[in-house]
Image 1 (cartoon, rainbow, N blue to C red):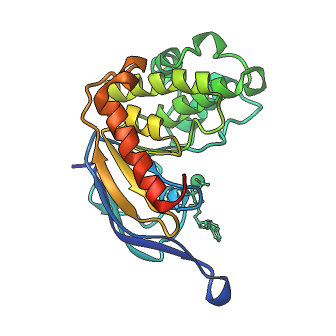
Image 2: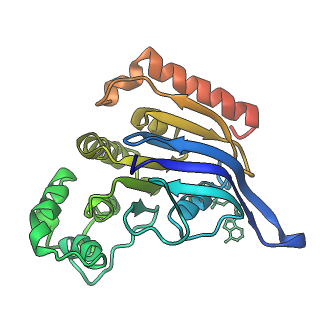
Image 3: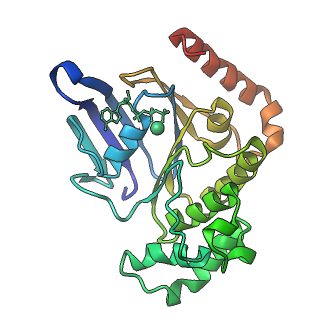
Amino acid sequence: MPDLIEIRQVTKVFGRGATEVHAFGPVDLAIEAGQFVSLLGPSGCGKSTLVLMLAGLLERSAGTIRIGGKEVTGPQTDIGIMFQDNTLVPWRTVRGNVELQLEMRGMPPKPHADRVMSLLRAVHLEDFAERHPHELSGGMQQRAAFCQAMVHDPRIMLLDEPLGKLDAMTRERIRSDLQQLWMQQRPTVLFVTHSIEEAVQLSTQVAVITPRPGRIDRLIPIDLPFPRDLAVKNSPTFVGHVREIQEIFRGFGVI
Ligand SMILES: Nc1ncnc2c1ncn2[C@@H]1O[C@H](COP(=O)(O)OP(=O)(O)OP(=O)(O)O)[C@@H](O)[C@H]1O
Ligand SMILES: [Mg+2]
């Protein structure tokens, strides 16, 4: 499978001696093609550290990571990645920012113009294509960043709390856009979040991470049909999963 993520005995230790911090692992996790897996865990448990190691932007201390069967040994340019703070450049329009991701990969924007516009339409930004980032709200900027992360049609997406800084209502709307895009294109997604409800609503599986050093306490399959709209939150299965995960975090002493 070209879009399988395999994490084997991966560990990260920062610093040495007295300043040593065991941040993460050892963790084993296999994410199959087309799955939407959330990493849910307390602050400081190593979620962002794992994302950076997967993207090949940070060296691991031990273990192996394979993406599509190939070991990760340096920056991965064919994946889509998104962080809590977006990486829009202020001097380009929304369209120009999305096109920048094509240009950086040596892909000419012209033949992909339809794809750029259809992504902008999918996140309701078609009327803002020619505006600059400072003319958009925070939520609109994150939606533009989604288009950046998806424009080269990545089969794997790493999303590190992309909705973290948004208000509850905006979060809800973007969640539904994200779910739509995932259902249409079915990339393999690793999604980092602090929100139990968000993880249960969006995911096919939720990996519950322990406090630092982060390990996977439980991998919970979420067996609810897609699309999952607001109504799903009242279903007994949804409520049951949220309670189950709350109990785990209560056990850790983090809530
Ligand atoms: N560059 C670094 N040097 C030293 N320690 C680091 C570095 N980056 C992260 N750490 C430590 O590793 C641990 C995990 O950090 P990380 O940012 O991965 O956590 P996180 O789970 O993403 O937290 P949050 O939910 O707050 O974003 C923390 O204790 C942090 O202090
Ligand atoms: Mg983080």
